[in-house]
Length: 62
Image (cartoon, rainbow, N blue to C red; front, side, top):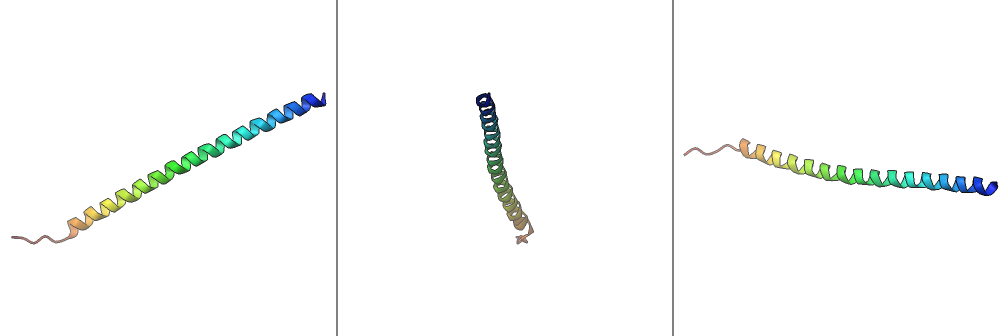
């Protein structure tokens, strides 16, 4: 019967390992998505600041 206990224990260990790997995969995936969104936000903020600067530059009137 120790063989059956050993098999159950191995199966539980395998299930736990799969859960950890799955969780780690999704965490990495979420981290990549977050970094991409952060880069996009930074780019949009820079564009907004450039547009704001252009509007603040006094224009010469003819």
